[in-house]
Image 1 (tube, rainbow, N blue to C red):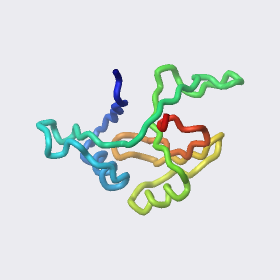
Image 2: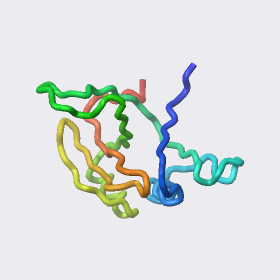
Image 3: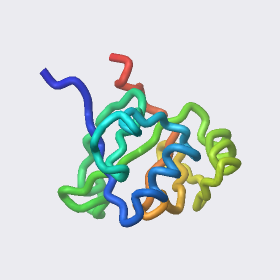
Image 4: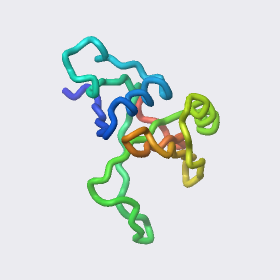
Length: 128
């Protein structure tokens, strides 16, 4: 039976990306110094997860995302306080916006692009 989701982030500078996850998000790394894997292949504990399936088009036919598009979203209980806390640790945000849920975008995970940060307003599934 399936036991979890393993998320992959590809980076042109794995050391900078790892530093962000270790020092800004403070995620523990389970492989550092414990395996023969290369340093850039560290595995981080990310906590509970859930998976959402969204349509590629909106009700008026507008394109929301192309087929095959995936996105990583970090969930929090209070978006603004989480953004403030992460900013003190070095994260930078484009701002917060409201569109059914409150979202904030860090402008970059170093060398790996953007990750959505959001405060869900839907019932969460990871406690099921």
